[in-house]
Image (cartoon, rainbow, N blue to C red; front, side):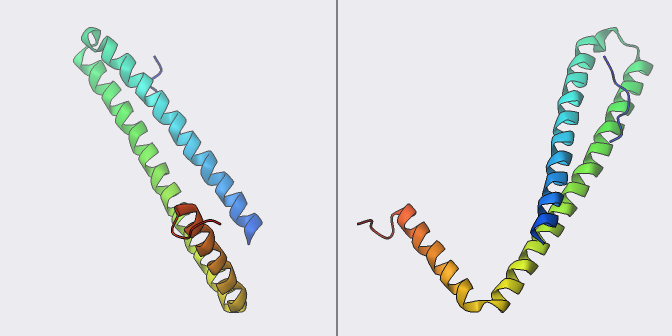
Length: 121
């Protein structure tokens, strides 16, 4: 049982999204590891001394804290990416208003057909 503390434009957006996905999978793996460590700790809790339990709890809390910090970082990064997407979309609409209206109309018709609001022929 290992309870040690673990350290935790379009092409630009794709690169950032790739990093965010990697970070979320890393956090997911750490959560799985933390759960297995907690399960192992619970299975052996009756045989551990109070000092050993306190040390194990402190290590678990430190790991949880570092994962929480990493999750906050991912949330901030996602927020920045969303804001960047909004800015890119706003700029596109300002530069090409007629194309934007045409695209929005086409998407609206497509969604209407898919949902069934607009009957198919």
